[in-house]
Image (cartoon, rainbow, N blue to C red; front, side, top):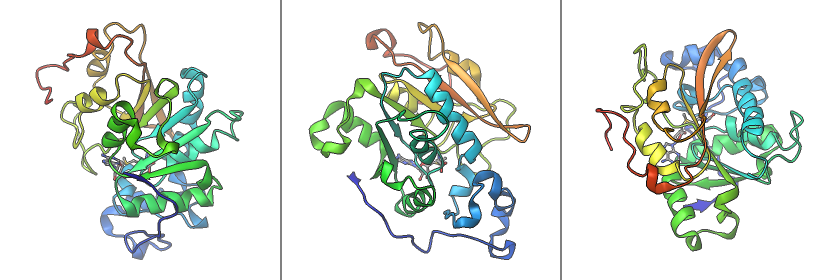
Length: 268
Ligand SMILES: C[S@@+](CC[C@H](N)C(=O)[O-])C[C@H]1O[C@@H](n2cnc3c(N)ncnc32)[C@H](O)[C@@H]1O
């Protein structure tokens, strides 16, 4: 777990300019490249896996705005726990200067497990002029969070943030390209991290979960039996829903929620 400055792009990082360069199973995603990153031609880099999970820039920008209205202004740090190739982290860093959200976040931390993917994110952030506004961490975000909550002394100064004023944003993998064609997506079986794993790790902090658009709302509702409100927003591009985000307040008293279950199929 370490803070990293600029990592080099590797041969796993691509900027494809012609359809002929693109593997057949990624061609439909590449065709949407200007929706995903309107400035794609300026030299956006992706890994192959990133095409399946990247947040389209218009949605990332809208989420950054919605975090501003939904999350208390007393929260001044945000951690993107699954940074990928950077779409959300860039939008969050941009929220310090754009969209009328001046100085929204004092600190944006972006954590990514895969070095090549993180190198793409840093490169893409530099194209957007915000690479130095983001603290980049290479490693497992569950371990990072565990250190933050339980042994902050192990973290470098920049990463040792005040938990009470920090919000988490999580866009985990959903299980790859064929993640599910079910009419209702079962969050208990989401791979590799199901809802119980995510919620169990994040529940003591305000957090936003970026989930499949057909996610089972009943499973999300069960997270908040004593909360007045969990906001769930559908995010659309060109008239079609692409994803939903559940904005989940921190539990106040852990004891009353510590043993929450998610129904008979819960796997944790
Ligand atoms: C759905 S993608 C995130 C997409 C990102 N929001 C974007 O717009 O590019 C999920 C990312 O999480 C990373 N990842 C998976 N497990 C992780 C973990 N335990 N800690 C940090 N990153 C992880 C994957 O390598 C992948 O890049």
